[in-house]
Image (tube, rainbow, N blue to C red; front, side, top):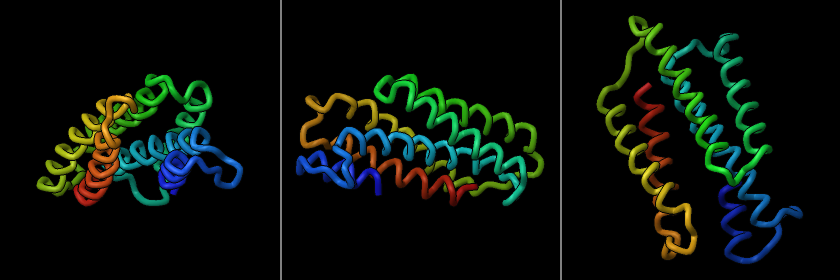
Length: 154
């Protein structure tokens, strides 16, 4: 929803609920980073409603919000919250390895989609060089596919 609001405001030059394209883009950053972080944490396969799972999601979301409030347009404040979630997930996976079960085929597809999403994200950072915002559009498609296959894998 936030991404659609951002793109509509950008394309049409409109304000939605008093927010211009820049504010919606900022809100979209928070939700995109939070979603990627939460999808990665799914791989730890912590029990639903467990205190540890709830705490990890709350800390991840809080760190994302703080990072984006500090400076939403500096790439480090996008990368660090995602990297922290990935490192946390990796540590939990290593500790919990004997208990975990994954769909290997979906996991491989998720990794391929993540690589495509990362490529599209980086190439789409410069609006002026992204003809018709094709790289940016590719980011949306690839990250959606990544999320689907990642959740299916875990």
